[in-house]
Length: 284
Image (cartoon, rainbow, N blue to C red; front, side):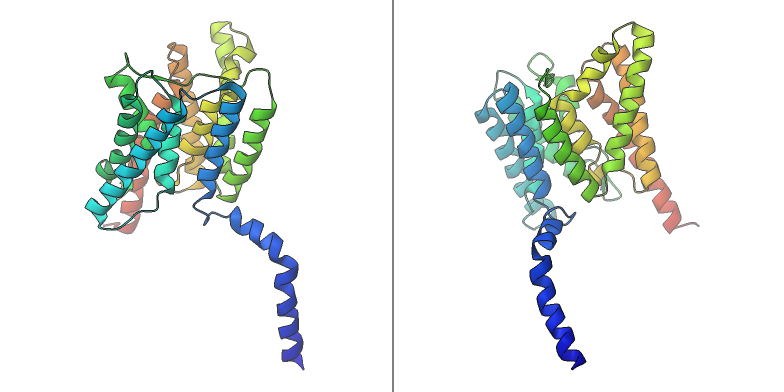
């Protein structure tokens, strides 16, 4: 009788909880396709609202190049077919962030980003976020042909609210919201510090964080699981240091401050984290 009642209860439970379970699975860290869906939402919201893309064809070229390089390098290095969700995120990030009238910068930036994943590694771990590394490389080697997105949401709040709501939900589900929150709070506080130094209005200093470029930065680049340190405390410290370094670049009138800040702080933090992990495993 007890077994029959238990079987009956277990048979009824899935039917009652199926919708909630499906939603939980969709927003879980195991869903590899959730970040691509979110970044596509940023693209659509930004394009519909403010036309953030140079063109759809250039963005498609960036995505295609990223996927092709991911397939080729994965087969060459690991002898297996990769899951292309990460390459899609890299390609679409490049498509959104790059500004150039030419097509080749989009393809080259994606190629550098994916190649860096396989070439620049230490103890089997990445040191740089691929798209961030590639953008900084292009800013240094081809500044006359290459620029980055610098658009804000303007006075229209709904695009920012949609993206922030989805971004907060997803980063919370994948246990990375504390990184985004630390960076955002640090940016706002340091924006006030910049007003004391520069004399600019506070809203002028804090306004950049409302742009689509920053949505990619705070939800994808600084929270990238492959290029963040292991401990939660360490992740918050790194996010704060990125914000401080960015402030220094901003005071030097560098409009690409967040990219350079992460490029400087990120690999140093990763090297320290890898070194500490290796010492913990081999104390002798």
